[in-house]
Length: 324
Image 1: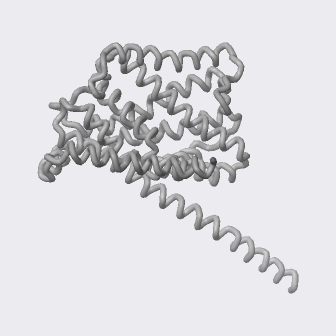
Image 2: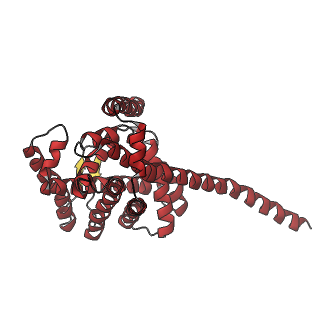
Image 3: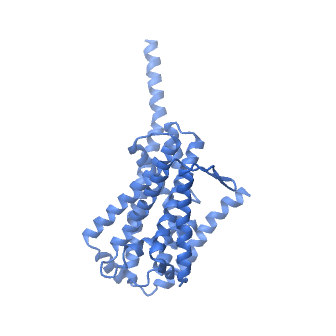
């Protein structure tokens, strides 16, 4: 069953890429390369800088995920080390897909060197994933609370569904905070166990996760033209829904799924500008971080390979000195 489970998710992910890409192609078949190029070149240098700043905010918040998890585990590591490990893990996981190779592999290589056990690293990975889910529920809930009409952008869903969704999504993090404040016993869901953290840890989670989503959605917001921009609240709400659906699809990098969902939910913005903004998002949030992450991994592995050779050479020199 485990082998079937491990094989099923990559198949589902690739199937999601194929279906969503086909649907996206149908929607964009009237889009010309010239209009897309014009939309990309219409992004001003100032808005490019703001989009880049949003990317730094998103990845800084992701590094904070790991620091908060380490605080929950009672471990202390330098910000610099955690930032590099977190950046590399998320850059790879976002592009390759959690169903194929998650950031757990990178975190194991990095944090085991600092003395964390396999159980602690597994807890850290689960904690970071839950922090994102908590942030998505918080941002999505408050977005629908103030703008329940956002659900109408997704297949024309009725307004009451947005109001019910807002109540349910806001209730989840609220109950989590209550459980943390009053030290509720661990909540068991099947084979999983949710241990409520200390209030100071929960407060950090509720700040870090929305910051990451604000940063990531800010990339798209600033890449859209100011004239036909539906507003940050709309972009944020649509992005959280689209990004969450893309993650749940297990598609590598959310390829096709993110784009199709986002384009469908933005009928009031010019299609070339929306596609251009999504390309900017992929460039800044996914492609460039992946390139930097691969450099970090190659450098790290090269140093690990050199370390035993250096030790062996030192031992040989020591033996030669003893012979003399």
